[in-house]
Image (cartoon, rainbow, N blue to C red; front, side):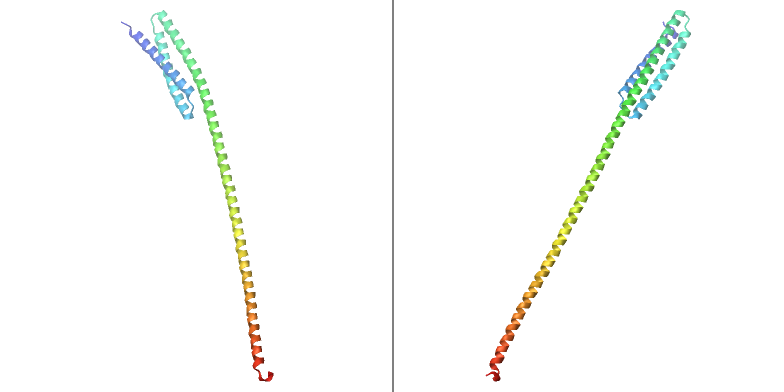
Amino acid sequence: MAAPQDVHVRICNQEIVKFDLEVKALIQDIRDCSGPLSALTELNTKVKEKFQQLRHRIQDLEQLAKEQDKESEKQLLLQEVENHKKQMLSNQASWRKANLTCKIAIDNLEKAELLQGGDLLRQRKTTKESLAQTSSTITESLMGISRMMAQQVQQSEEAMQSLGNTYSIEKDKKTLAQDCHRNATAATHFFTNDPGCK
């Protein structure tokens, strides 16, 4: 039957391995993270929690090693503790590197989005200017048409006025001719029927 101390050592080692694997998985998630920054912050929070749990378990194992009766077993466990500490330091280095890589990727993505947003703003500005130019062109065309219609109306009025004047002159001529004819007829009639002219 295993001693209670050995059971505690085995459980502690198992938990250390479990937390180490969980830390590695989270670090890989950070490497794969493409943003946003809030997602990276959430992953880092989880990594810190796992590192804290891992550190506590390593400290527990170290304390168990110091409590061993046999010096050989004590030294063996202390060597395991040292290996776990080195592995934890390696994980911390990988964590920092993964964070740096992820932050660069997020920054580049944000810059690309800003540039794309700038292009959209420029495109909207160009479209707005184009619409304004088109509107100005349409306005000028309408004003030109309006001027042309006004000229046509004026010309029509002048033509009608001229036609009216011509008609008036022709009417006056016709009236004058009729008056002359009546006068001539009256004069002829007068001279024909006047007794003094016979």
